[in-house]
Length: 556
Image 1 (cartoon, rainbow, N blue to C red):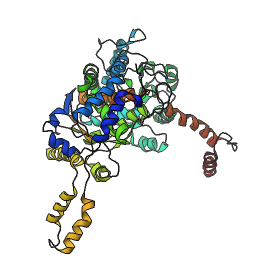
Image 2 (tube, helix red, strand yellow):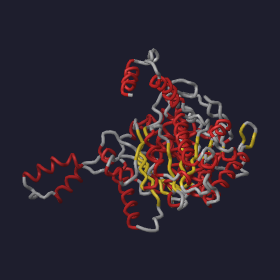
Image 3 (tube, rainbow, N blue to C red):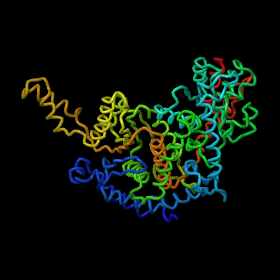
């Protein structure tokens, strides 16, 4: 499909030439010269509205970026993914999180099998189970209904359910409390368990292999706690599993009827749409979860069917390529102006950096350009009083994705107006900045020193550099109509497809994560050395690791 390495391709070379003069543009001038800029560089898809006019681009820039996307085969690789081809080449797996949110009769084929029936069979089972718990029909070992759900997982089995549950907090069951545990540090679980009633607590253990070290350490600790308070047979009523390892789950003490499976073509960071989302189904109900899937499916349809030039995931992806590979910007800040989206930056951090934090191409050759940027951020307006100083006046520009919600809550309406005002003002300030002349005029009008005096003028000139903002700092603004399950589903799917498109352009495999495995494998050897009854030889360890092991052994 590709005839050229990325940096040798005609489209990339055209962008390199274009950047040589586009880099001198200031967005103030672009807006002044284009009265219709907002209308031309904004769009709606799957209920979401994107304003990308505050970017260092012209119509020609976008045309050149779309040409690169076409040259790199984005449309072709998109069809391969939706067709169930094994595009995860290092693991020889299909990549079909899109199948998890497709309608029952949509038809998605993997190895000659329509997996839709399998997907919806599991969806039906988790929906039925969730409704039993939500209605109070499901009883613990002592005959009491469930009041607390604890989701035990890590990575996608933790970040996804936690993020989505918190985002949709207003839609959650009012009488159920939810907790999410992932850390191998015992203090997390130790702090939580004393606050719970073991007779009304249900644990979800989410682990595809039922062997993930962090998850199973926490699961066994929770199991021992439950047995201590509720009896030896209690795990059958207080634990359910999301796993494919039936034998290990049964040995743990969970009934087969309460084991919900998924498939090897579902990557961990893309698994929220599967049974891994059980905690979310329990929180918002089966109808809410189906709306969540429907919102994602609407974005899937937009991504698959819309020309690249009007395709929201493609637009976000190619803007990211523009800044990462031509301007050299090393990070992207996610700034959700909606408190319940506080875990979204961390979720997108895993999605993007675990997917595209790669240094070799599909063929195993070194990538010639920078790949995944560092993803970071926090909710506004908290970020304004923390890291926004760097965004406005730091030495390296950081593109920002502002995300907010249009429909105000039923109460505290003035708060919502202030929130929206801050969101829009921050993106405008990053774009406009403040010139030295503007800073000087402002100081002339406000400085409490006699105007025109030597002291007055000297103080102004001293302060002007500190009061000047370069501006010209890019951002996108994403508007959700309301914080509903379908809107959240569309938002997550948007970023999933953006990540995919960038992986295609960079010619990397966005769906493996071998870098995660190295540290986990070494941890086993280190743990064995820490636990050894006699002093280990440390032949396999460097002197730093060996020294630290001995220091820890001495303190224990």
